[in-house]
Image (cartoon, rainbow, N blue to C red; front, side, top):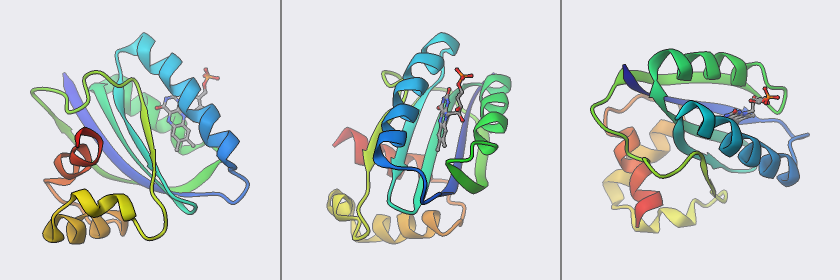
Length: 137
Ligand SMILES: Cc1cc2nc3c(=O)[nH]c(=O)nc-3n(C[C@H](O)[C@H](O)[C@H](O)COP(=O)(O)O)c2cc1C
């Protein structure tokens, strides 16, 4: 069953930009083999990741990611079946968000508010749609 999983977590101070580069490289390699796609947004203090793929595969991956010492307090915001992927061509795309979330300029005011709420751990059924706008613009 094709599913989508969304979580947020807190980036540990020991997780340097080089480490984030490593995470992205490794993710692209590993996810390609499992037909997993998605995106990773990161700021100095937070991660937000969307994983798409076979339900069992992404849950297994999430269980592994959760234990990674480069972040902690992973909080799953949603896991649900989907008909099609939002990010079919990305094994794992990365995008940095600065503390002012300047890239959010592509979002409408209402979406910006919703996005901030997602980062604070509130679930929103439009979450992945909003996130996808940041990558597809
Ligand atoms: C925020 C974050 C996101 C990650 N995302 C992925 C991912 O999408 N795919 C992946 O294989 N590993 C991901 N990792 C890395 C895993 O936790 C783990 O280090 C890696 O999968 C181990 O790969 P290996 O089994 O090939 O050694 C992520 C780690 C962090 C901290």
